[in-house]
Image (cartoon, rainbow, N blue to C red; front, side, top):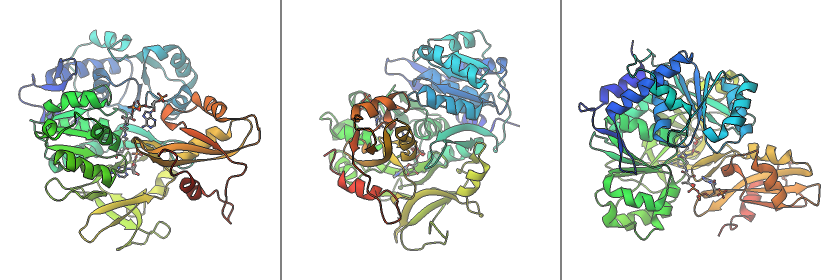
Amino acid sequence: MSNHLFSFFRSRFPADLGKPFLMLPSGGSLSYADLIDRTGRLANLFCSLGVKPGDRIAVQTEKSVDALLVYLAAVRAGAVYLPLNPAYTVGEVRYFLGDAAPVLFICRPEDEDGMRQLAQQVGVPNLHLLGPSGEGDLLTLAAGQPSGFEDVPREEEDLAAILYTSGTTGRSKGAMLTHGNLQSNAETLRKYWRFTSEDRLLHALPIFHTHGLFVATNSILAAGASMTFLPRFDAKELIRHLPNATVLMGVPTFYSRLLAEEGFTRELVSHMRLFVSGSAPLSAETHKAFSARTGQAILERYGMTETNMNASNPYDGERVPGSVGFPLPGVELRITDPESGALIDDGIGVIEVRGPNVFKGYWQMPEKTAEDFRADGFFITGDLGHIDERGYIFIDGRAKDLIISGGFNVYPAEVEAAIDAIPGIAESAVIGVPHADMGEAVIAVVQARDPALDETKVLQALSDQLARYKQPRCVLFMPELPRNSMGKIQKKLLREENAELFG
Ligand code: MCA
Ligand code: AMP
């Protein structure tokens, strides 16, 4: 028996293992041979710490080469990789560690004190440290391990990763992704987007989400290709590295920020073969401005943490602005009535998907899992859409109350709960309003009982409760929140009234 996902990657490694897997902005590189050597040492370390097949390894670090290698080493060791946004506060991390019960937690050296305490409180037996330049004890310990490692056997159905997604109500849910989910989607994308070993992907996404971790990295591994690995998105840095790339993947904000740069010209990217956008709607305006500037059409695709990638505009055919294209090969996609579940042939409904890409369920939440699947195995995405007469899928909105800011999801219910817990607040409504840079911005409309409360005080109270990207960009006060005849807060009205807030 093989390790389903890593054996697949291995089968695609280049014959010459000296070829770069990662190219670094400093000029250095990490070859495929280095990948095997360094993940072997890390995997040996994990096993020596008592990590057994199926155990979780939680990681909250800055983006770095070593952080990416920890993912691959966890897979090799048969563990379940659990990445956490470095922006999460201690309170947020407490929940994830408590829920997933990892055997090992890897965090930043500067967070050691608080996290060691937390790990003790929630019962995580091992804590090790990794900084962006390799600081901390993790790599020192790994260096003392042999590089040879026999990959732990894992089947298609075994878990490779848990990625937490917030929900419209209640607690965050851990989406359980199997070796088969990740392997099949990587292979589908490699074929559909025509990756070859000659490709060089410019990687500027975070690596704690599906987009940067799986869509970008796994497609590259599936092709035995290379990535230029940047620590974060910076438009000027991208312009510096685009001449050496063939593919860029990003959220819509990447593209609108690149278009704002004079140095982003047709000549700069004339050699590029593919620009992919996803995680949030790409406006038809940005799509068209990009085509006008570069002569190339961005390829927009649609996915979710729970499902990996579901749909994509075609590689060869027309890439329609505002559409996410067709279901990917092997993925079934249908539109249904959100209430009855009846098929809708012509019109807007909820998008449901089924295929080898779709996750196994939510970690330790069988009831929530059952709620989100139809009896015939289709997963109810909560996105609203329709399919036109040519088969192109359009996303028209969301049945779920969700804000997407710069590609990060913010669930209003979570922010409202944090605001409502502030003494002196009567109630709150958190909404997304149009924002030129981030697509949507989070704002809060509150009714206060205490007249001394102001925006600064509310924001201050939230600062150590919620990751920065979830915190409202502004807090508006109203004597009373508007309600409909059923007594429900009229968020639509609030969104309309504040649509021009950010120009
Ligand atoms: C950073 N900040 C944000 C965001 N990012 N606030 C709201 N929304 C954000 N997305 C905070 C910073 O902490 C900072 O706080 C302030 O906002 C301004 O930061 P700025 O420097 O402008 O931002 P940045 O650091 O340049 O980041 C913007 C970004 C980044 C490049 C768009 O957010 C990003 O890389 N987004 C990608 C997200 C992603 O990978 N999503 C994939 C999810 P302060 O004001 O205190 O300084 S996977 C997914 O959705 C599915 C599966 C799919 O289909 O892909
Ligand atoms: P996440 O929970 O981070 O995996 O985010 C998944 C959600 O992002 C989907 O359910 C959609 O609402 C949204 N999304 C992803 N790609 C697109 C896209 N191309 N257009 C519109 N929404 C998208």
